[in-house]
Length: 243
Image 1 (cartoon, helix red, strand yellow):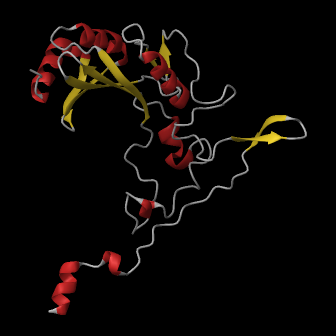
Image 2 (cartoon, one colour; image 1 turned 180 degrees about the horizontal axis):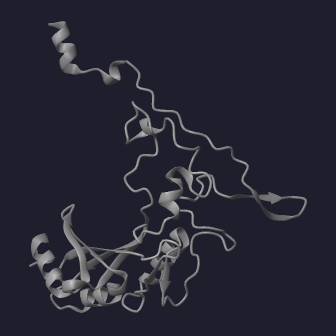
Image 3 (cartoon, one colour; image 1 turned 45 degrees about the vertical axis):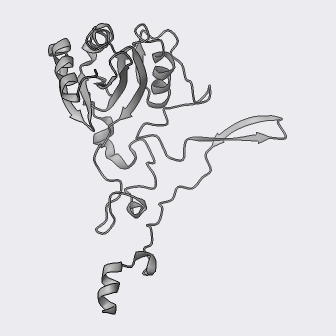
């Protein structure tokens, strides 16, 4: 029988011990955090433990936590969710080296900006686990590659490298996988311009594709407009009015 979430958490804590920096139950699943120096050993234990048997790596998700929890829009009336938050940003769309997040939050090295989140599945035991690991250096985020443990990590680590610039030490072939060969920068980083840096077009005179500086003008989206019509009528209030 599969473990409950609480039982799984206890077994993971028993197996990893001091390698766990933080552990919790989140969204009905177990989530742990490990230090970069303990990442490879912890993942190997999770795979090889007979009690845990995490034989499958489902995904590796890169994350940029720059200004995590801060709203992009500062107004008195806009909400922090949905279209209504698009009112008045700090800048016109994360422009420049620091974007909407400011110099301090982007340039200071906290060791908590970039992380990789590993999603593990035990087919044998029918349970799942999330493992989060923060890169120690924000300027050059680096984590150990786990390709020797799960071959599926190959392309997943390449994706995190391509989009976030996270370097996976020991990866057999760490190169871009989604962006073009000559692409500069990492597009999922918070300080990467939303409009990009270059645009591509076909030049008939030259007979080839050319790269040019982006010509799109940045703009701030207008807020969602709530119209006073029957789509937003309160049936209870309408009934009381008729009575």
